[in-house]
Length: 349
Image (tube, rainbow, N blue to C red; front, side, top):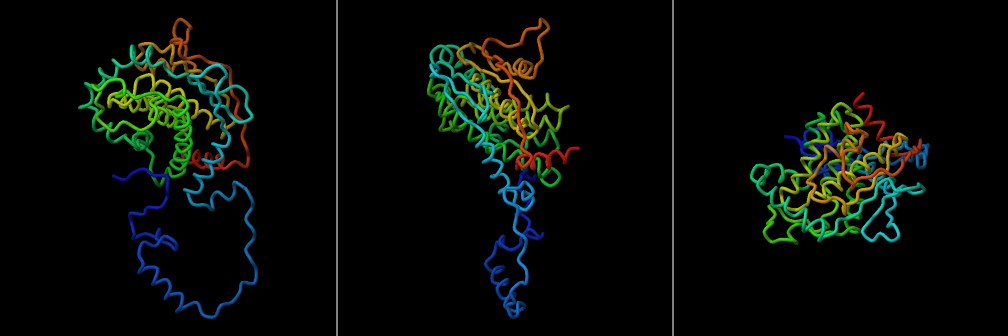
């Protein structure tokens, strides 16, 4: 089965025209090009007119670049717009701001090892271990890449959805960098460090447990793809939650890590949409010290994050999730992200 990729060239098929100059896979091909040139080029004549200069820093040039170059341009621009901050007097917290913006659009407070993890979260890891045999194929398939799972929900195709996949790949690069910086700031131990009876079924990653990177990426994917596939939002969110829970089943995360990753992923997804479309969204604070014995109440968190109220009018989550004002995105007409986003949108109209 073909793997979804954001690169438009298919390097596995040498029968098509993708083996152009600069992408030769054989020294014989390069040698043939040398002798062919010697046989046909003739006497050198200098061109009468140089090509027009390229427009500097223009989104119009994006179509001239290779997909991996465009991804790196978008990646740099978005990262340049973000700033990590640490609120004074809150050693356990980290905030993510837009450069030049006001209040943080997401704030995470890490759990206390003794009160939250050891007493209230570790038991969940032991309970979920019973699902390992059933979930093993999923867990192993999702260790390092799980975009194919989202592609199966949305019908993504490497040729027909190439700009959508390119956009997602660019955004994923940003999310990985942000989540790793968050993990470094809010350093938290993995389940196996609390008990040798956890015995994870996969290699425990060599970085902080909080927030969950898989949850962050999965919920970012779900949030952004929901922008293009609005009716499929619930299904996309369910998929993101399952991917996140699989990491607890595997023994490498706690449920509280997933909850924090969900908030971070949704907020990053919303931030990307705001950069591209100029939309407004709410700022959220996730405080793990109030998380208690919760497993992963993602449906309630979804209702809260997306403005759905419980029947009694209250936000259907505990004290660990709180809304703090709003963020309004500003778009740049010359933005490389705007160019790529428009291309992706055009694939689904």
